[in-house]
Length: 280
Image (cartoon, rainbow, N blue to C red; front, side, top):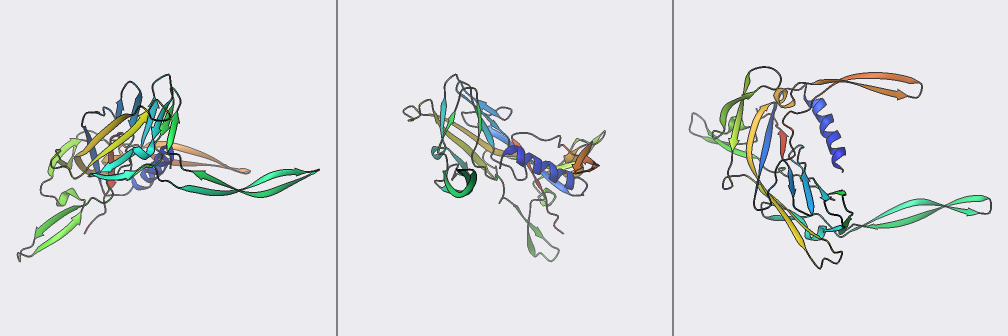
């Protein structure tokens, strides 16, 4: 799925969820390592990598831009997403078979014959000068991470609560941040991490070359850690709504639909979020 399609799904989800009460946890990342990412971008003399992780639980999506005046080649088999030291491939050797109808002329008649085509996954991508391409496969960044908390009742019996809700985490700090829907500030729960305490770290390793046979190889390696969680109300997360009108034409009839669209003021290419399930 292309990032534009993902953004539409995310926007639709925001329209539907913004009217609901609840909590959302904002996750911020920090770039570490030699190939630094600044403002969601890492670049050298050859290539620019632009990240857009924004989405539910985070998406390892990025685009590549050839800055040079000559072609560049990306080898996806030797480019991987590494999550907590576990390798995840961007390229899988497979073929896809598709059937289609091909027209052929027989005298004055046109006949259609069923044909089958086989498409092989592209291992090496050719990037012309001054051109963008996007990653062929995306991964969810933070899907399986949950917070485990232990509480002790009055009878000294301990119970374990598995939740992402920072309100149940004694190490999270209650603090104030500016309101996005009006004046003043609101209470939120925050938890910060270092390279040693982060719940997750992930790397994007890319292999590219100015030669199609990869006689000369170059590399970019971007490493990130989860640096901060901020839990807030959905109302503050979505911010002030914008009123939009959608015009639709259905044959002879026309109609208008008025909607409130919410664009999160916290949206950032190196951040993402999670809608929390309420635990009672």
